[in-house]
Image (cartoon, rainbow, N blue to C red; front, side, top):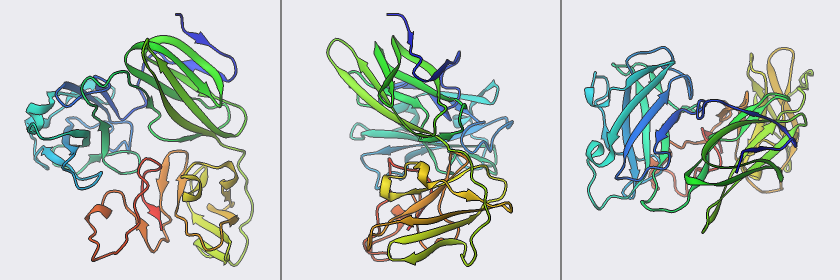
Length: 356
């Protein structure tokens, strides 16, 4: 079957796959007994190691013995030293490679079930650290051996916000060559028999896009879903008076948001009310002086909700005026005695700190 393009949306093809990912991993769907090659792109994530050579990995695992989704086990690398065991090979263009046999490198036993690989990257003395865009550790899923057909969007790694006529790269991959179809808001935009490919999507109409990957072989059909949003035109207006920075509760069902973020291009409010998706109605208005505001968000009476800001399409942060936050990296270390009934972090829905 030849690759087919559908003109429902603006659609462009890339010549190199996975170029917008923090990590490229071979095999793409590793099991815990595999030999893996990890390629780290220092220009992605927080981009702190752009231009730095040499780069060292700091590597661990999330396993069935981890106490939380961020509890590393079998950690490799002596922080702050030029540890040859975790030295990466520079490939040029800010790409750095390390290859290892997982059981040998991590040293785990037969009773361990590996769920994810966990990484940060650093310079020799650890003063510069490469992380995910949100500042979190970098994770990559590990799969059961002989899991059958798996197909996923490898990129984007989270919901992205782009401007009208901008394009966003999508990378798809599967465990074996199969028939793949991609639907954007129900419209078929891609079809091919392949194991891996990449393409760009764009649109001229603001709104949220649901992108569904359908992959089929002779026995199985599997699906994966990704999201992106086209931002509406930016509103610029004078800030209403009398409002403080942060969230302002106007009454039992109405709140007002105010954020100072000069030099930023777009800000959206993401809330637990819609699983932290970028709702076009929640675009904030910018003032001529660099503040952002959103007036009168309606919330159900008596219902608590959590929120964060989406800045320039990919950075998710809690309100800087928060009195309490959900922290995906440190909440697992808070005991029930210290904070009874601590709310759970919404893993799988968002990244970064969230305002309670």
